[in-house]
Image (cartoon, rainbow over all chains, first blue to last red; front, side):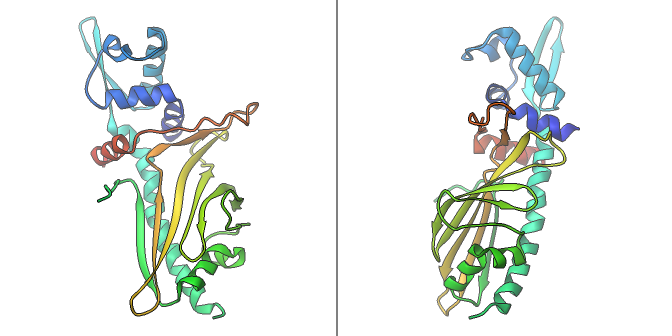
Length: 104
Length: 145
């Protein structure tokens, strides 16, 4: 399930950092790796997980690959926030009734 | 001015009842159950409670008649069972000029989306808490919308 992949992918701190960095602009793996204390294969593995979750997209140009964050990958998360936007007003209406029925 | 993070869910409403009464509806388990969910809340900082069926909460702030804030971690059908989605809920109460209470409900921390906390089966003590910067998420959510 895509939503599960999104949450799983973002559960790892390094992957979150990769996702954040790629949201600033397109980069290749070498540029991306700068500043990370992990190996290039590890970065590639994180990229692969992020791509699998639909959070990062890849553009190939000859032998080079460029990556950027794909904000539409966060839609499952947005959906989750949306559920609460619907639920709270309903609960608050119930709260109003509870208050009316309470002892002083 | 505090910057508004667009991923926070915020509601305000004016209630005719005084703060003290609203506070009871938020913090007495039978009353809270009547409008939110069955629970075993104790309004004390550090108190852990559950919103049924399976949302684990911890009270972070409890200022009687003024403010209640908790962290909640909940499972979701959409994610693996060893993950929890984390967020924060707060209730702030203020007097209205003509009597009554202004209730402000803020549900946020979606930005620390990460919101995902992993509970490794063998290492309960090492909770990996996640933080995606609020601005990045808010920005990404806007673009995704």
